[in-house]
Image 1 (tube, rainbow, N blue to C red):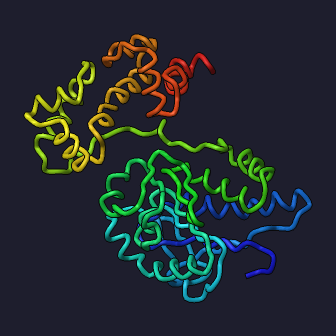
Image 2: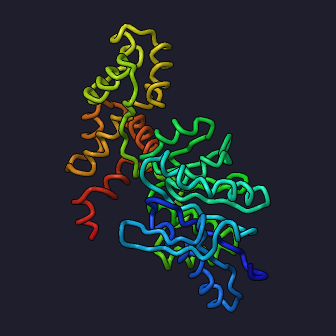
Image 3: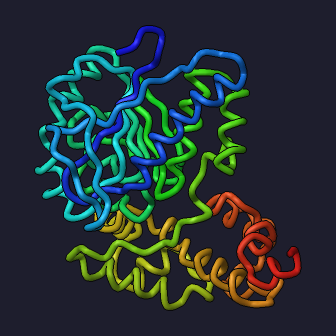
Length: 332
């Protein structure tokens, strides 16, 4: 390690991994050195690619990534970045298990750890997330909860920061925690410069606007499946939890308990399919906010706006202006 520099270690996982996360993390910190020099300051970071060994890894059958150093030879670092990995989770964890003792040792000696997108599965497999908060790609949240029930998953978050462990939301939102960490390691001015250079919306903390809700149905509770199907097929109607329970000859408390166990959602949360229908309508139709509201069974404007914003992070009008093709054309 070079004196005076923060040492950044980027893992080169075995198997399928996101080249974008590896390259993006490398660029974020090496370009930060250029930004610092341009401000008449010394470079702040030494960046290395770290493998279980020095074997090059090939991603997408095309891109070869050569580690600079193996875990056996790297005894000290300030930050370890775990990029997104893909494939069967158990297999991916198994072939990368050689990283885990090293990650645990580095963390115990003061290194910080940051997982990007579904790199959280590797971080979760170390046991270091037990009892802690983290995020991951919203699409992988059900799988993550099943595999790591002792972790407090916050799938709406783009960034979590707890006890020297960072995590990020899905896909390209990995840029937000990288810039967040850059600010912690340097200052706000450099974070703003990096955000402008990479054209990243700084201080973005929620991925709710990107979530496409899909109910968890990989379970064997038939009454709950039927309740899910009823909610999905009748989103335009008004109904209560009590009505749904009665429909399937269940007590309310029994339905709520079984529903939560089977789907990881409460019944009320699952009724968000109404909001998913509203989102789709805003994206594709010319209907105004009130028309869409009535279509999905809401009659109270305030209640609809409140529910919509709670789930998406945007007001109905903001969402329509952001994602409707005609609105975008008019803005252009």
